[in-house]
Amino acid sequence: MKHSLLIKKIAVLAIMLLSLCGCSSDSETETFTPVDAPDFTLDTIDGKEITLSGLKGKVVLLDFWATWCGPCKQSVPELVRIQKKYGDKGLTVLGVSVDTAARTDDEQLKKFIRKFGINYPVMRDDGVASSAYFGDSEFGIPVMQVINRDGKIVKVINGFTPGVLEEIIEPLI
Image (cartoon, rainbow, N blue to C red):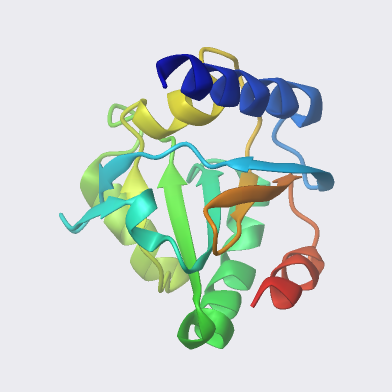
């Protein structure tokens, strides 16, 4: 069982390493054989616990981002719009902030959420989610994992280009 989980994590990491780019406004979409999305549990900035496996049956757009990243800021209005449009149809956007507490404390993160009208859960990564998805490797942001209703990663989106997200999400809904 542990060997099988390790192989799946290595496969996810290998795919991620091949597709990752730095913080950029150009998006690259990678399509690959679906793999199980690594599970994690994090608290939202408001204190609610979210476990990814608890969202099985929904389409999940998992967004790794930071408040200081320009393309991340550009993507937020589209993520807000997509959550509003497809949330009642089975989509959950999850924002995983990779901001360090030293750089952006909880109050600053909450201020950012209010300023941008973020209508989806935002969690501060404590290393759990990023380690599950990227291991010890460096990764560029924004990077989004599109997870289907069966809990499989079906696309990885590096960077941000307006309109790309909806084209990917809509067929899964």
